[in-house]
Amino acid sequence: MQMLIPLVLMIVLFYFLLIRPQQKRQKQVQQMQSGLSKGDKIITIGGLHGIVDAIEDNTVILNCGGARLTFDRNAIRTVLEKTAEPSVLADEEVVEEVQEPDNDQTK
Image (cartoon, rainbow, N blue to C red):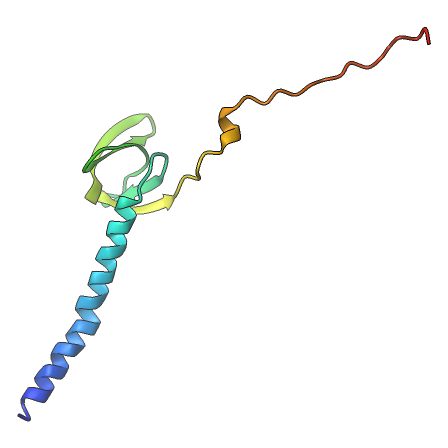
């Protein structure tokens, strides 16, 4: 019985120091990868910086200075910048009315 207590303590210690933090990290990576959207600036596990051009099932097409490269979604290490939701005004043309000055001097 006395040998069982240190063994149980060691298992609990391993769980809180090794297993639990790894599970949290995996969950964060899955959320980051599932939250990818077109226009996000990312870094791959190989250190390549690029902008997400298209997303398919398990692949991501990156624009890297004019070159389009296809990567597995799991190769994305970090998202540097998330794109903001496009505003409605960005798609609409803004027309400004200009009133001409009244140069009629006959008044």
